[in-house]
Length: 124
Image 1: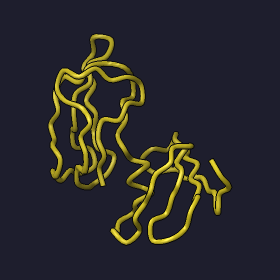
Image 2 (image 1 turned 180 degrees about the vertical axis):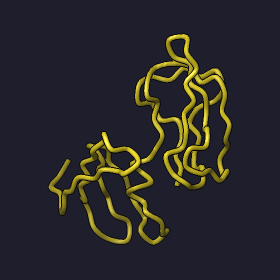
Image 3 (image 1 turned 90 degrees about the vertical axis):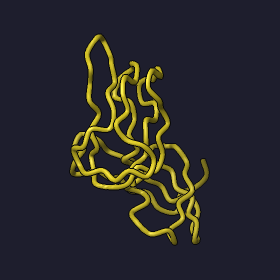
Image 4 (image 1 turned 30 degrees about the vertical axis):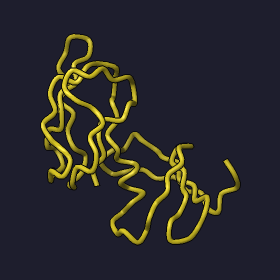
C-alpha cells in the first residue's frame, strides 16, 4: 500500500471493542481508502456515511453454517433486527443488525458454510 494522505482510528459506539484504522490513499470524487488494510473505492457523491457503511459490513463472528436468512437485498432494517441464524458448535446464533439502514448486499445463502470474518451482508 502506498503513502496515506491521512490516517485516523475509528470506534463505533455500537461496537465499543472494535477499532478500525482508516487511511485515505487517494483524494478526489472517488476516494481510495483502506480500512484495516483492505482497500475500497468510496464515491462521496453518492451521499451517506460511506466509511461507516464499510466498517459495519456484517462478518461472521465464528465459523459455522448459515441456517436461515431473514432479509434480502433492498430490505430496510432497524438496529437489533435479526438478519440471519448462524449455527456454530451446535448452537444457533442470531446475527442482528448493528444499525438502521437498507440491505445493500447479501453474500450468503441458507446452508452455506462460512469462516471466521467471512462477509455475510452489507447494510447502509
